[in-house]
Amino acid sequence: MKLQDRVAVVTGAASGMGKAIAKLYAQEGAKVVVADLNVEGAKTVVNEIESQGGTATAVKVNVAELKDIENMIDTAVKEYGTLDILVNNAGIMDSMEPVGEITDEKWDLLFDINTKGVMRATRKALPIFLEKQRGVIINTASTGGLNGAHAGVAYTASKHAVIGITKNTGFMYAQKGIRCNAIAPGGVETNIGSTMKNINEFGVSRTKLAQSVMPRGGKPEDIAQVALFLASDDASFVNGAVIIADAGWTAAF
Ligand code: NAD
Image (cartoon, rainbow, N blue to C red; front, side, top):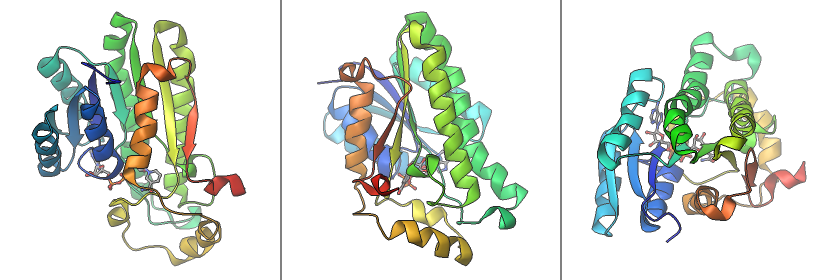
């Protein structure tokens, strides 16, 4: 068991990668706060974890809302006494809009969820980690956080910013027992496509070029294995890093 008795919060844990991470962490002995906007989905994941002998609790969170984020971290402390691992995974796609066609509202929505939520949850968790002089933060970025051809401008910028938060946080608290790393998944088979409405045809036609060299899509469980490594003591010397998990897709560029 790599995470015996650790307490983990995983956002966006009702579906896709977050769900796979929550389930794998529980299998490895962690007590998991399954946090999601979709609270019914989160409860289903908790039931699955409990039926396999694990420990988990569901909490409704909109990561764009400060009070929800605070309640999420407080729930971990209230239920399990502390927090050891924060996985900032919740995120949405844009609709492939290039800068000429993005609205302020869409830009703000993407940044509130994908970027500001990461900063706020990390800020809320830090006093707990600083007091213990131990803590792990894992951010789900994207290959779109490293490259310009995988999404629209808002998603691309929001995920580049997540990588900036990751590196800065990893460096700032490196001597405080806190590690902060990001995962940059390539294409993974999840429900994220459902967040894409009114797809921008021009944006799609441009990103298709990069899509054409993708070797294959991944499974959420492929990413969960990376998140397990980063959460565990096996990664004790890994900090401020971005682990690309994309079957070699972006090795092409
Ligand atoms: P998913 O849609 O299957 O799961 C995302 C979960 O986040 C859902 O359960 C959803 O309800 C939740 N969520 C959405 N908005 C929320 C909010 N405001 N507050 C709380 N929860 C919210 O998608 P996924 O692919 O598993 O996405 C997980 C992360 O991976 C995202 O950050 C995404 O940007 C990133 N990512 C996905 C891919 C991919 O190909 N699927 C590639 C790279 C990065």
